[in-house]
Length: 511
Picture: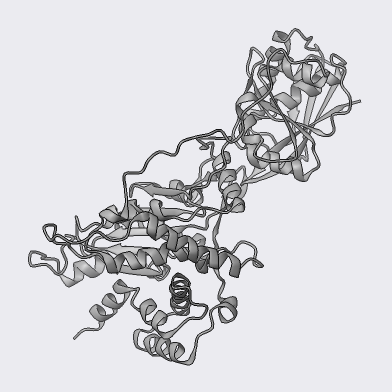
């Protein structure tokens, strides 16, 4: 009778249980692995034989069949090795073990039978808990990451022999105790918003953008401080909730980018990308549809410096993720959906030479319009806040603005208000995520505010999406001021948040 062990496969950041069925049949010596496994899965047959022999077990010289069920689901990776080896040893009666239906196996085997760590541990262990699996055996290096999920027994083994000793309830030759939430001193940041001078009005809108999760575009000449301001945004990002942190960790686990696997991420991601990056790097892709930068920036910030230099195809590929908060990638080996709810921060010059409005700018109207059209209308419409960054007199002794600490306190207070407001709405923690159908309920406007918005919409011919964004921004401004309702003053400030759109409208309609 075939033996059955349990392992897991990944679809995006979701884990799925895989039953690894093993049988030994009469016939010429051979190894067959069926169940829609990729090349890495099928190549396991050589390492399995070597690992079993080097562990002083007998590798049967018969026909061996492994079936990875369910067979309709494609399997990728090398982490099935341990489950297949244990299944074969059980099937050939080389180990005596009680029922292992509640035990999962995750690990790659080397030729000398050592167990190597693999990526994607966290979503697999989460699925194990949901499937009532009580014990998980992984490589020692994966234990800290696996133990983030409470309510399971996690065992780390260095070799196949250690895994067998564990299954046969023999004592371990080495300690199996591991640290969890290792103490780690946060690296000091030498960036602070107190160093930013002369941009007090702009910093108000930076605070609004971060507090409400609104996309923001900074436009200004070279050297005016666009990148300097953007690089300080990580110092004011609010801390994540535990649910958000686990979701981010699942993405980084699949991408094998966890720097401290045993430590829960508390700081929001900040990803910065060069403009020569491919569409696959931005959106995600490759043979197995791995997550891209927009998913790695989930619940955080994606900064695109010189955004107008990115290819039009790459920028337009973000239109759907910016709207839906997720991205679906289809490849030969499957269709994966990754979360991509991020705040987009872009920086660009106002014209090809960068000095629009200054005396030495020689750009023609056609060149300016063509340059700005590198960012398509749909992408520009999704930039909630668009602000010009002016040139500051370096020698003017101005007082420093608010520090990052003070700004972060204001932002966290506003974000706390939003989390409480939307606590009954799963997946919504900020104003920018609020769907249009709920605006009337959570963002009601008084008569004066509604009249002001209507007048601006008629004059500038705003789209429905733009109107909704103005309302959400006004809601965030009210939250920062601790006001329960949107007032006319909040709407006025909100209507001043899209400089480029108004400037382009005037530019196209002049004369």
